[in-house]
Length: 158
Figure 1 (cartoon, rainbow, N blue to C red):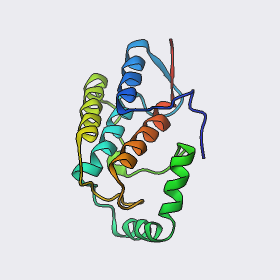
Figure 2: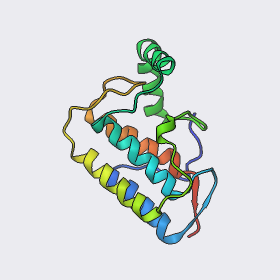
Figure 3: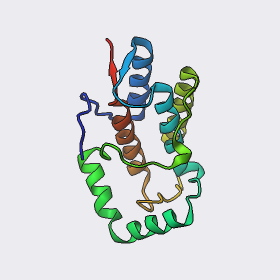
């Protein structure tokens, strides 16, 4: 499950923004499909879903997610947290797939604002469609891992 992540191991949400700004300033090579602006957009969406709510998935997908939540979500969550990763090619909701043309600086600011909101939000949180109810520290940890996963696909030029 764990991919090579060029040593990323974020300890705080501020570490994520520091890395994003470092990549923006120094440049990077893409090892995947998304550029920095697209990643920031995606990460901002997922940082805000626990606060503002999730987009509604189609009924068949909601049914599958409910089944997973009931049967194996605790085991899967433990695996994500222990391995600090989701696995290459893990699916995401189509609503959080960014468009091809985004203003990078605007998306960096959007991510910074979203992570700040998450960091300051005392709760309550909306339940994860996959993992169910999570506490504040687990939500923050999941966002750190999510950022490590995506930003690993950008190789710094510096």
